[in-house]
Image 1 (cartoon, rainbow over the protein chains, first blue to last red):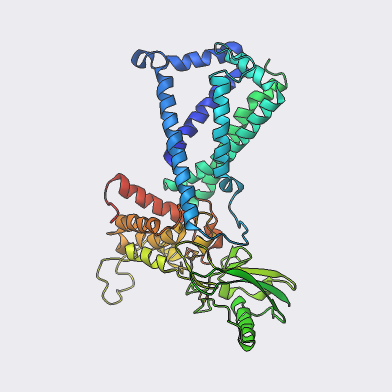
Image 2 (tube, rainbow over the protein chains, first blue to last red):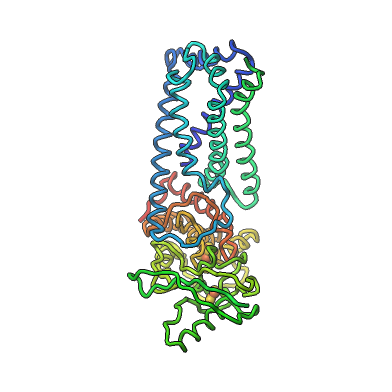
Length: 208
Length: 252
Ligand code: SF4
Ligand code: FES
């Protein structure tokens, strides 16, 4: 969980940084995928890096989901009879919504790939002009809304995920625990803000 | 005070159980929760009914027997308090109080509110010991132990094995207990030789006993009557990880 989540977490940060290029206009944004494809060109060939990343991420995703399903099943086995009356005492909202949140994020991921990677569900769908696709997307309020819901869900997932991973990998201790929780929250908020900046700027006309 | 108790009644391990309502009048605010159950039981006996079976022993918060789910919270509403140390002044007149046993596959219900926590003993057997010959009590300072380590070990040693952590965990995981036991010995010099085998073996036993997997949901520590901190779990994880990465120990 911690390791595969960590790999995808790094990707999310890179993805967010790339997205923010939209604020610098069509050229900067459209250059970004070309630059990604050219990384390590000499060694890996054109687009080699992107494919390695895709395979790595897919593998992480599959393992992450497998582990999640195993944990959910173990939890079910561990408590065959439910409580008649149950009140969550302390657990954070983020911790309690990890499983359904993960499902929402996975569904959004499918849509997102069909929309902006394959172009099938995009109003423009011109793979040579990602800038045009993105701006066309977010002009529709329902696309922006779906996106916002998914990003906030992702934020919650990351908030508990980052902290939980540090705990699983044994990095946390009494003195550090508060700090680590703060870091997890800060990172989650920053990621939400970074991703939401794009639909926000399209809707407010900052990016045309 | 007048309370309505909604208590889980189950005649035996394989019987079906259900919640039964009991009205209890003149509950004194100075009674402990168990004393209130005693009063109700006396009445039930006089009425020729089966008294409610619940576990208890020390009634001073040190034996770990008295765990029960009170209004959906392990050991009831007071922080760091066992059921036997919980006083009725924390309830008010007219309250409905739902009382259930711990629910976990590893803790089967024996009767009413009594569960079998023997699974914890299996985890202890897997690593809750040291192999150094101990002999008679050594001189107090024969082995120097840094004060912070001694404090942490002592904090962990306060675990009374009550099972509230398992009962409160949404995953039914016993990690807090396992971590407390591993920490207690793993921080002291006498516990070093088995430090890594202890962590790996106890965790493997924990998993094999149908406890759930820990997702760091954080429900256990607030429910723990002895205030075992969540960081103990990170410490256990650290030892398990170190043992696994270095290949130092494989679970038996
Ligand atoms: S860790 Fe706390 S809740 Fe769990 S068994 Fe020990 S004393 Fe009880
Ligand atoms: S009866 Fe011993 S801890 Fe409550």
